[in-house]
Image (cartoon, rainbow, N blue to C red; front, side):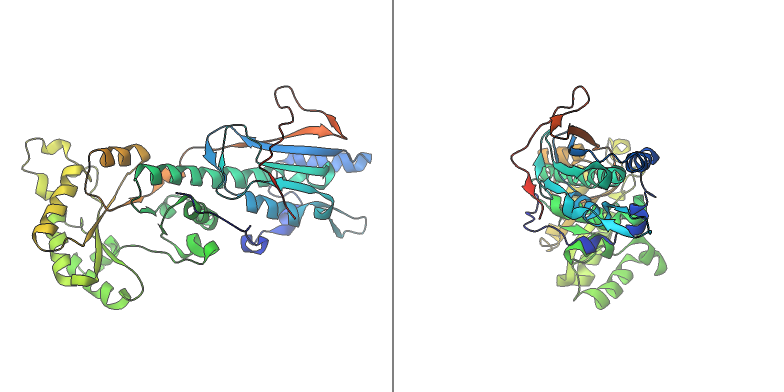
Length: 364
């Protein structure tokens, strides 16, 4: 379930490279040329710019887009000083996390086109990226039927996207992110598990690594331990639970899709039981319960998608939470901007008529 965002994000949080955006460094060159030509010709058409996308989705990046318009609209004076243009624009927009329909107008910008023509590439890119993350996370949250979703794709993409992507995941319903950057816009903290690298540093001893980790960090976080290092998740989960006791929040299953866990290798169809599968989860759950550890949670990770989570939930697999990575940053959710009114008269390319949306709010 998406988080309700009652106030727009402070523009300062985005740390925009304002000078570079103003000069068109991140913009498609033809938009910069458009601004340059119109200003040189003394043409200042008053337009209505209308922004939409084509999917059932959640709106992300709108506060970032507004911040770009606020800080970077305007023109350069003859003496080389930047003259801000925000106060001469009328901007109406939906809110972060709002559900949006295909072709629904999510943003309008009214004013002298030369003040913001150079910004289209940048604000559309913000909307596209953040909305993609929100839609993907929202889908897995719904598929998980209320079970926690941990947002773990940081290692699968460039580090510069982490802050805004983490915010999008948070708004869309993920309960945890893995880096401080991802959590920074709402003042959260990165979470995680006892990782394979630390286990390797302790000679492959998951129990020793977990005890040392818990000794140091138990007061700061829920301790969750990866238990597939030796490809014997049932045994390792029991050993970790016995060693940590009440300090253990959960165990995380992350068996490679190329491997069959030791607890399944004698099954008649063992070759089909690779990776984290329903039978492995059931084996671990049963072993923990039988040993007196019913409160230890099971986090399933490793190649999970919306479809795979739906399958697990439909089958009643005893998973308590899902760690989802690269599938959450795949796909596209592109936005389009069109001039639809010029100097008070309809003027749009065929198929892109003015489509007012009563849901839009004026941005003060």
